Image (cartoon, rainbow, N blue to C red; front, side, top):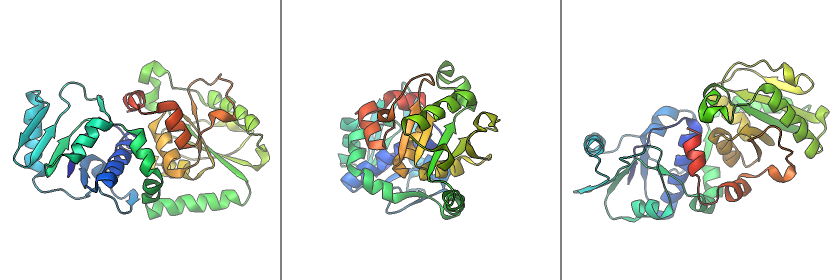
Amino acid sequence: MIIYLNQKGRLGHQLIHLLVLEAYALKYNKNFYYKSFSKKYKGFFEIKNTKNIPTQVFSYWFIKIIYTILRSLKIKSFKICSFYFFINTDNQDKVIYHKEIEKLFSVSYPYVITDFMLSDVDIFMQYADEIGNMIDVTGNIKNKTNILFKNIRKHFKTTIAIHIRHTDFKTFVNGAYYFSTNEYRKVLDRFIKVLNLNKKDTAVIICSDEILDISDFENYHTFYEKRSPIEDFSILKEVDYIISTKSLFGLCANILGNNFLYQVTNPEYLFTKNNIYTYKTLLLSEYGQNLTDTLKNNL
């Protein structure tokens, strides 16, 4: 069993780790325990046939005590009885890739404990369809989303969700991915143009982590209210297209929703329809085997 102790990040960040853990667990037919995800998001997600054990495992507090001691002493690797510790003692944002992750899942120790960030696009792609069918938001949130979309689709052919990430993105990477509502509107204008969509047949749903003035979108059929992050995530999952900044939140919704995503990195960029990706194309073309920058820059 893998005991995964990394606690960093919000929903998108933790979902990425969950996806990698699920993929490796399926490959090696092993369980894992991701307490941080289970604790923070219990009740928000339904995960079928998961290898993640949602309840506290035997000897967890013993493991935590040993882990705390090892980190304080900067001991990266330690083996005792049934326990193998592989600890990130230097940089909490350090990422390990397939060779080291495979070692964690293939060693003979009953308990393998790590806190490294995990990245492996290749292994996830092998199990992407299976994992996509495993994970969904819970019934109450899903029902609310279904009611919204049932009403919208009575009147509109196409749905676009714009995830406007403000709050922490105002200072994150010196504001490189912070864009005004007007800049998102300009991206939307081009988006409609390059896909040759009919504005009259297109519903635009605004999702954000703060209260917005959406007057910039007054020429569109816009749906907006302040929702919880899980409700916004559920909406992003269900639309035809997502417009989002370079955020793991939007990326994970794209992965689990299997829809199309355009990631805004420069609102003035004259993108084409070839820049609007499915998650499989996006992961392979933009990230390949390396999600380091995404993971480190989207906490």
